Amino acid sequence: MIETTVVLLATGLGLGWLPWAPGTFGSLIGLPLAWWLMGLSPRRRVVTLAILLTFAVPLCHWASRWLGGGDLSQIVADEYLAFPVAVLGLALARRPWVLGAAFVLYRLFDIAKLPPIGQLEAIGGGLGIVLDDLVAALYAWALLAIGIALWRRR
Image (tube, rainbow, N blue to C red; front, side):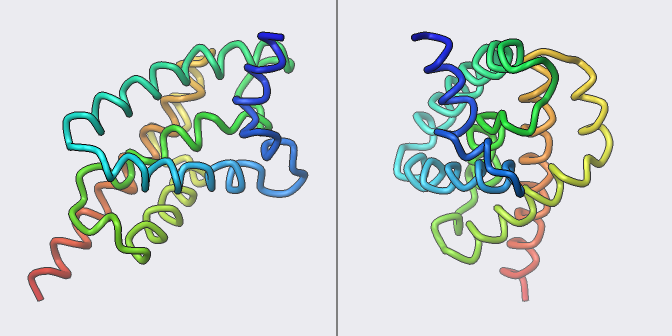
C-alpha cells in the first residue's frame, strides 16, 4: 500500500508513465500548485514550499529505489514540487503570461542541464533528484525577475 502510494505520487498520478515528455506533462501539476501557493501569505508560501520540497526528497528517493534506481523519467514529483519556486515572490506571478513564461523557462533549464544542474544529479538519491529541478526553478526565477524588472523600467 505505501509503495503504491509513493510511486503514484512520484509519477504525478501516472503522468510520468507517458511515453513522450513525461517531465513536461508531470510539471503541469506544478501550475495549479504554484497558483494555490500564490494565494498564501509570503511567509506561509515559503514554509509550505519548504515542506513540500523536503517531502519530495524521500518520496523521489524511495520511488527511484522501487522503480530501478536513478533519476528516472517516470519520477516527476521533483518537477511539479520544484516548479513553484520559479514564481516565488514575483509580483506579477498571477498573470498568465508570467506563469507560462516561468513554465517554459523552467522546462528549458531542466532539460538543458546547465551547470551545476547536471552535476547535482550525480549526488544521487532523492536529494540529487530534487536538487537539479530546484536549481532549474531558481534559474527560471532569476531570469524572470530580471525580465520583469527590465520590463517595468521601460
